[in-house]
Image (cartoon, rainbow, N blue to C red):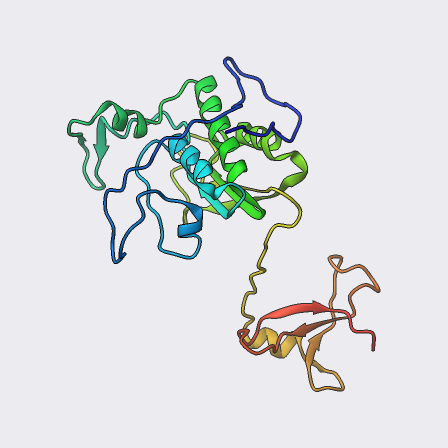
Length: 272
């Protein structure tokens, strides 16, 4: 099966960089089912588009290739990945338990498991690893789809350029910062702490699905800010500050649509 060329201009080069032109089919083997009658031997899209979930175990590149061959190309609406962070940690060899000073030696693992759970990379190898898999994910994503790539400070700048090349820099939607800790870590080493991870948000087209999230307002805010009432009895606030261009937004209404939590809001600019 042929793979489409990348969308954006190359912005990052590394030793051994090569695109994926074609893929091979790696047949999946059914291992276990739960509450499914007459399970399918092959995970085709037509069978699973409205059916039970699928859980794969194996090399993710081979699994992505299998999904493409089995009809999932352009059918996936949401992809979230938590790839290796290139942290330099070896999660196979030693395991540190909370509250214990010593580290425990891990039990024996296969070569494949050692590769999967080791996060020690040469920079060029890591970039090629991600480049190939993100290219396959782009092929799976639908026109309404979105992809979120979870990373941290080690590789986020590299991944941003790789994603710009694969999805097109014009399809970058947002950089979401996730603060992991509630308090501050030890600053005895005289450096800023690293308390956040990054989620890089891209889409395939500008027709991606986005569902806005509204935050409930406190009763105090409703009483103090939304103290005005229009001719239809709806409460609203008169916006202040630079965030609203003068003359553009006249009123901010409380959202009273059925099924929406009371106290959420939306911005409205009625003609009257």
